[in-house]
Length: 425
Image 1 (cartoon, rainbow, N blue to C red):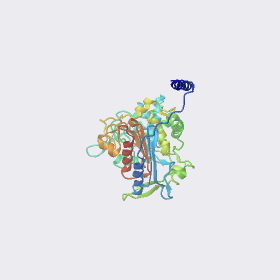
Image 2: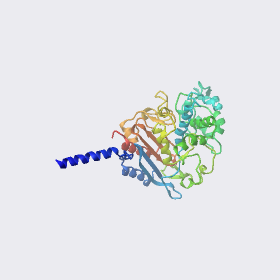
Image 3: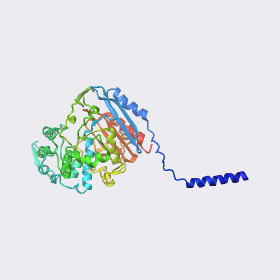
Image 4: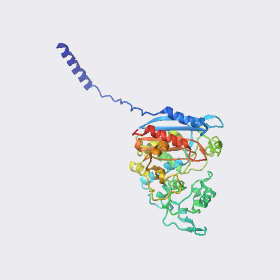
């Protein structure tokens, strides 16, 4: 009995000491989500070994942690430089979601309205005529039924073309106009653009276009800064994106990847040497539609901000309502998509600056990794990223070549990433 009382007294004393002790401030780190690293490694390394790609870097972020990072092959084949964690890539049209986020930031501040006519800021756009062919194949030109708006530009439904597809007389006219000249600013090119025709009435169709390049010019006019300065102040600086800009700094040059061109026989030739590229020589071209260089880790910061509805590590960049608006479809199923990438059986629509996956099938999920709610976009040199709010995940894959169809490795990577990160597995 005395032994039992001693034990009880000891328990009371120890309990009291515990109650008097300061609470522990250390929190156990969250468990790392499971991920089949070996399977992803095998898939990416095989793509290099088979000659499908020269080099590849990929990253998967899930439940607040980077759960996969892989690097295989060469960033500079001619100098035998391997892909590294800090390799710098041309992200081309992955610039578009960031420029769109900048425009939405200006909308938040009341400096722009989505309903504003674009010609309020770039008067040359008001004079653009809508081209069509009559029954005899003779070109006809009509006035815009209504002015193209800021929202039309965000959604690629302003009626503009691009000049990079080479199909049809309007696309060819844009190509001949020389809108992508690194020795000029994009603002200098607005006179050229204003003299070109529109391929349709504003608001009536989706066609991937020069529209977000125009938004970059509008951002410069509204902020009274260069596009690079505006992005630095509002996004790159606050997010700590020290590797992302429109120029390749001297310290980045050894890490700057070369760009290649895929030939019909599956081989690659050098298209832009990373050591002599215009990106390294202080060019003027700051394009809202495709001018940035970045690293995988840097781009993850921007993607995490969007995934977290506008906040990154305690810093508020955009309001949650703004990010949700960006990542919704605003084109609708009744608007024709003039390119097969979106709409119809793809189940994808378009938000402000990126695609939005609306619906999927089991086959799309298994073969292409498409899942409802995903938002993202890719670049011409085959970089790609997506944000998956439903599964709290992000995927980024970096390649560097032009030519051919979208590479199959994109789909294989996204499918495996979805399989490993989906919450209902």
